[in-house]
Image (cartoon, rainbow, N blue to C red):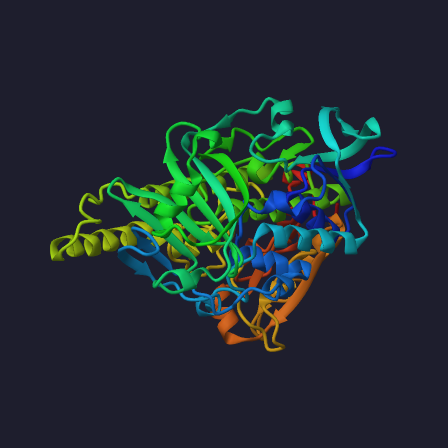
Length: 551
């Protein structure tokens, strides 16, 4: 696909984690980009933002060479992820969900582990990685104003302190948040309910554990006779805490909020010293853009979907958007991607956002304690103590999938995608809590360790990968020839480990650059069929209908 003269390959609007990650993923694949962000560099702005990176996001960071930076940024690896249900830090304890530390949560399904990395740490980490590539221009203090597009490209009007200018791009991606100006320019509806209005306050409290008897935990959920009303969550395993007051049906006016009284109620005492760093009102919603693209303009992250933060799926869903879109843009720009490649982005990613949004909203229903009797939890005596224990057990049951959600994080699949060659037979179940590895087409290619110490996931990212399992696996030279004829980058790896063969279940497995299985088979296809397979997975099947294998 030819670039219009003088155009940027990709313009990215929005310099949060999704925009920065997209610039990094494109650079990983050799694609230049221009990123514009209205705000100046300001880590304080990030203090009230997301902080949980799941295993799949860390697998992407591993690909980009920064997963060790995330692991080593300075957090306490032994800090427990536990959640406590309490009337206050110095009041009654209803229950404790023991989740363990980061290292306790390591499992066989991924080479990485879920980690806490607050956004004021993570965003600059991404920014530095992008700058090291030399393939992205980052312009802060530059506002996206408007766009027009035609068959050959997109023209964006940008405004900075130096005035307005027009830039030309092959593609433009809106990563500019829930109030996306790009989405509004495209007149794409943002559909879904408002769940409530909340307020987040970032606090600095030195040695909080010295002011209460409950011990260290990542989160304390405060419960009164009316039910859960606030939570306090560690942002950095140290002195920075996020205090969230939730459940209001109307937007909270900060000047009418007695914040000191709310903290005194949560702390159960009035002498804990704290510094208020930032306070932000916000709307909790479950919204999804009706479409993820219009022509050459695409949406990703919160510009495409919002979720309740209960479960930590918002930013991580956006990271899946980045890796899902990045290789498709690279394929189109390189010329090997067909006309159906980019439309597949919406077909694949929008259902994932809907699924994750529903899961997060169900989690939030648990956070609000619907159906739990809290009327006696502050009363004295053995009867009230039994009521507290009962309420704590019920809260733990309701919030289980907020803490244990491997299925949401690793089990999403693209079986209905037009660029995946799906298999017949019953589809695997999709429970939010549990993940069962499978190499069925459309699913994330399962992790396993190779003999040289690498994860098999380390083979994926820059090209299609054909995996040949077992000493007797077919050579599949026809697939390599078909890919070469179409200009599709393809690497072939022979893997003899018996465990790998058992996990992937077929001797031939074709994996896309995003790490999802596109096709698998027990036998090598003839060249004509191999060409059909390659054309299908690169989004060009309709371009070559009826073409002979000599083409």
